[in-house]
Every structure is written in structure tokens, then in C-alpha cells.
Amino acid sequence: MEELIAKRYAKALSSVSKDIKSIAEVLNVLTEAISAEEVKSVLISPIVASEKKTEMILSTLGDKADSTLVNFIKILGENKRLDLIPAIAKVLNADLQKESNQYEGVLKSKETLDKDELSKLEKTLKKYTGSKIKLRQEKTDLDGLRVSVDDLGIEVNFSKQRVKEQLIDFIKKSL
Image (cartoon, rainbow, N blue to C red):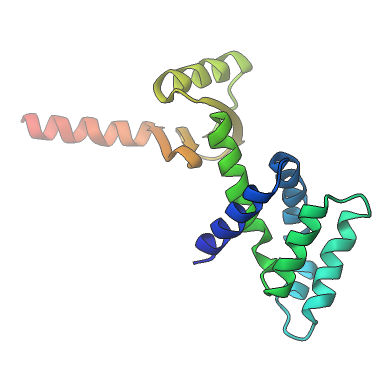
């Protein structure tokens, strides 16, 4: 439900703004600020007036903020939707990635790959998807590799345990 509402606000913001990329960057920074527990609790608190919440968000933008963004945040405040800023930023980022055909993905593995191997993997993904994909690495205890690009709906998993299980199943079936 939250995502549907955020899409409507993002679409409206995109239709009135000429520089949606800079607005998305500001909303990303606001998303980080809102993720702090103190700020989040103020935004969802029924005790704090919505005008005060709006002022709090606007004060972080400063005096040189884009007038479209300021008006947008005022509208969010009037409709008691300031807590949707992270979801709206996510929608805008996805739209920008789609427009530029460049996506970000995550490579999870036990060991970190060097830059050459990572770039080979990115090139392979580009060949199959037709999109430029920039991967960042995360260390996990997974015995294998897992590549996921959420915005494209791609998840590739190479696990030693899974290969063993499939090999055993194949041997059992052939007997």
C-alpha cells in the first residue's frame, strides 16, 4: 500500500520538476536522516503537530533548497505523509536507473573478488540483460556466490551445497 502511494507522489514530483536527479539525491539524504530512531519517532508521533514535522524536515534543506522540493515536502506534511519520503526516494531512484539503463546490484560471497573478476561478472550480466550493472560486494558466510539486482528482478545463486545436492539427486535418479 505504501509503495502505491509513494509511486503516485513520485510521478507527480517527476511531472513538475525539471531536475529530478538532484531532488532524488536530496531525498536520499533525507531518507538517511529519517532512518534515525529519534527522527522516525517524531515523524510518526501523533503528539507532534504536522506543521512542526514539516518545519523540521524543511530546516534540514536550508535556504537554498529547490522551491519545487520545498512545496512537495509541504504537501507531504499537510497530508501527513512525511514518513513516505524513503519510499518516494526509492521509487525515484528506480525510475532514474530505468531511464539511464544502469542498475546497482549486490554480490554476496565468503571471499572478496578482485576488480578484474568483478568487472568480468558485470560484463557478463550486461551481455545477458542489456543493462549496465554496477556490483558492490558484501561478505557473508555463504559458501558460493549470490548476485542480486533487485530492480531488474535478477538473482543468481551458485552454492557448493546446492551443487552437491543436485549431483546426489541425479545419481539417485540414474540408479
